Structure formats: C-alpha cells, structure tokens
Image 1: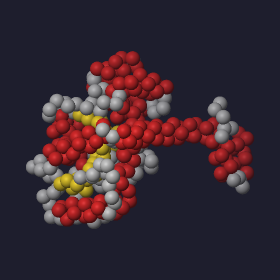
Image 2: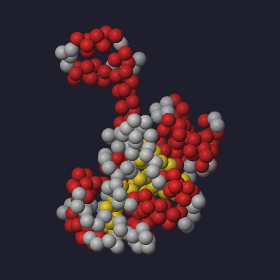
Image 3: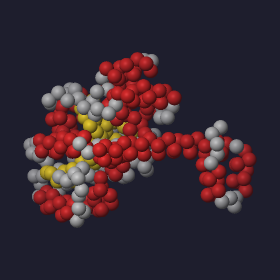
Image 4: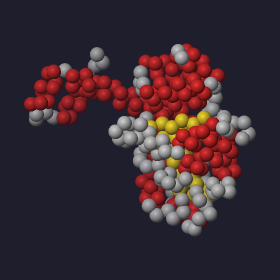
Length: 313
C-alpha cells in the first residue's frame, strides 16, 4: 500500500490503513515517510478527546478500560485504545500477555485497540505513541483511551498527551500513597478507586480526599470516585465526569493553551533527542575525535558542548 493510499484510508477511518500507518511510525520513527504521513494528516486532527488511564500494576486498569470503552461506544461514539506495554529488555518488543484476547473482544464492538511497546524509555512516552494517538484522531476517533504501563515515568508523562488523566488506585492504599507523593497526585483530573466492593475501599476514597484537601484546587475540582467492574457500579458517573472535564477544557482558554504547550514539549523533546543522537554519532565516527577521547583526561562536558554546538552537516 502506497503512502498516499494509507493517508486517504486514514481520513476515511479505514482500520487497515490506520494500522499500517501506526506500524510505520513505530517501525521508522523520525523517518522521511513518517514525517510525510504526519504532515499530511495534521490538519485533520484535534477532534478526539484523549483520556489517559494510569495507576499501579495489577489494579485492574485493563478490565476497567474494556468496560469504559464499551460504554462510551454504545451511543455510537468511535473509541480507540492505545495500550502502552512494558518492553522486553532484549528485543524491545511488548509483553503482550492478554492484550490479543482483549483486542479481539473489543473489535467485536467496533473498538480499535493497539498495543505499543514502551521500548524502555526512561522518559516515559515515546514520540511514536504521540504519533499513534494523532493518527487515530485523524482517523475519526471521538475518544482515544491511553493506558500506561503502570510503573515508571510514563505514568506521570501521560499528562503531556492526555486531555483528561484518570488515576486508578485500589483499596488498602499502602504503597500507593507513596505514588501519590511521587507525583501522580499532581497529574490527576479524576481519581478512581477500583474494586469499591472490597474492604478498605472507602478508607482509600477518604485518604485521597484528605490528601486533595491539603492542596487547594483552582478551576477544575478533582472528583474522587469508586467503581466496581463486576457489576458496573460507578461507571456512568465516571463517564459523566470525563465529559464534564472535556467541557471544562473547551470553555477554558488557559486549559487549551496548556494542552498545546504540553504537545509542543513532547514533540520538541523527541526532535532534540534525535538531533543529539545524530550529532553524537557523527562526532564519534570522526577518527580525530575518537583518538582524542582514547587519550583520556578529556573534560566530558566540553565534549558534550562540542557535540551540541556542532553545525548540521
């Protein structure tokens, strides 16, 4: 399939074309074909509401996302899911686990799902994840749900990608309260305590509310909800609050500006990283530089400075 056919297919909402496009940005990040693809679809993005779902591993995020996506899709909305998976440290591929079964189940309800490897990025979100979300946006998704790995920086950096961030926690906060202190507290648009039927769930709700009370909120008041994936308790309220947050952003220019600022940061940081890697490889490939480094006693900061200020060749 040629690139022009893929682009036309994306804009028609064709899922095969969308899958091919995602494979391109995943497999050839920063390449000319990836850039052409993104440039051609860019004027068609900006219509989807992006919901980030984050929280500790094993808290039931995937099950929750499955229920949430199906309920949002029922009135005829187009829903897509991007699930960020931990990568193999050897192959860079994702540990798919039960993703394939989940994907098949969601597809029967018209929900597109793509599992993306985190590739061990310490920075959390790779540019290909951002590009995947934009492709789905251009493909006509009304809602795009992004599920983080559940451990690491991506749980915090999802705030740079999502319009609404749902932080999921469970009964018996224990170590989870440490995650709140470590930065997750600051990124939530909505807090959800999953498995609300279990002992300790209401204490967890109160712990979060008490923690929020210590940080005065301006503008959007962060709700704290309980859900139960077994009987559907709390899901309608969660969808209602996601909608309310979407309305809040639409009515608030500073919130919209913040989203644009975060998007610029994601793209700019990735471009800087790629540029630095290219310059560093060029620097190290020159024999005189290698000889200088091999002699030892070189100030590493001066080397980095030389790489950073090297003109494009």
